[in-house]
Amino acid sequence: MASASGIRLGNGSIVYMSPQEKGARKRLEVGTRLKKLPPYLFVDIDRKREEAVKKGADIIHLGIGDPDLPTADAVVEKMAQAIKKPENHRYPLGRGTRVLREAIAGWYKRRFNVDLDPETEITTLIGSKEGIGHLPLALTDPKDDVLVPNPGYPPYFSGTVLAGAHPVPFPLDEVNRFLPDFDVLEHLDTKRVRLMFLNYPNNPTGAVAPLSLFKDAIEFARQRKIWLAHDNAYSELYYDAPPPSMLQTPGAKDITVEFHSLSKTFCMTGWRMGFACGNAQAIKALAQVKDNYDSGVFGAIQETAVFCLDNAEKLSESPREVFSRRKILFVEGLRKLGYEVFDPAGGLYVWVKVPEGQTSKSCAERILDEAAVICTPGNGFGDNGEGYIRFTLTAPEKRLKEALERLERVKW
Image (tube, rainbow, N blue to C red; front, side):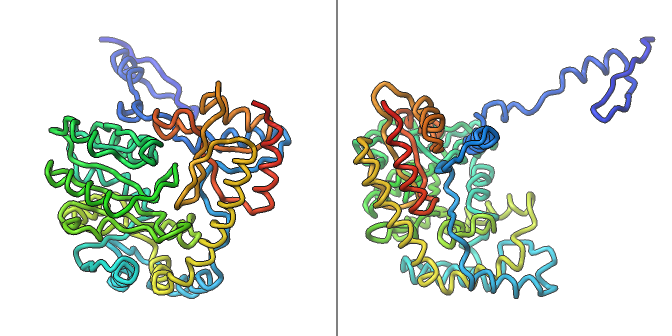
């Protein structure tokens, strides 16, 4: 009989094992799905920021879409009242309170003229990112294909991989104003496709889609029996006409789930409050996944969200005006410096071509090293983002002007 030998654990204790057990322990590894994921883009950016700060650099951080504007005083005061209520300190559970789901339906009717059933067509989320990440678990099986925009918000890709499905990138090109070309997609083999993600106003490009694009998407997906997921988190950050909802399109509810977030609209990124709405079957499936992963959104935040949605028109106006001024200032400034800029119609981002001879990574690194400004390499959003960098508008106008002055020092 083989004798046991010891192995020291990280806490200093020793566990005695047979040689067979010891060999098995050496083979323990993390799940293979995690190995398929690249490092999460914004974690890596924050690491580089910390390294630069440790060296004493004054960094202007234009890398992450986290609004710097404070949450409105009226919203904070509402939260202060709600948090004192004992009933809000219990497990919230489920799809969200009936009052909140009715407020969501009311806002949707006012904003998009879309009718939603609060009982069956809405579920709350711990931020829209969480719901986007969980949707492939609800609507796909392992080895199914999922169409994801390239470039696109990373959780479309990572949520698909973590569900065991296979992400199939489709290109968004500047020649088509970063809208999908359904004449090209018509020739794609979609036999295994179960789900398709879209996102307008778009991250990272700032493109906005017309209703006609959504009509094309609905027709494309309906013919192939594909679920559609539309990330509409930036719907209230626009610089011209208000962007539409995909659910305004006839027949959309048959196959569509649309995501929204209070994060950008009301400058509440840390509050983690979002919602999904649309097809009742898909909403039920997503809610069922969430029932097995979390216990709902904190009751006081739900109560405050009702206040936000009931007063959305007033509360969203000031942030939109601020970001609009910043957008004009920064886009004009970059163009004066010789950068080729895609003028955003919505969202928080400015999508910029890198100078000739540079890659996305080399350009972003030089801007950090020589100007102490952080931007995001475009290839972090997919290989179709290579050749671009992304700036956010999440700094005061004074700092944006300073960033432009620093960028003038970078000689390409």
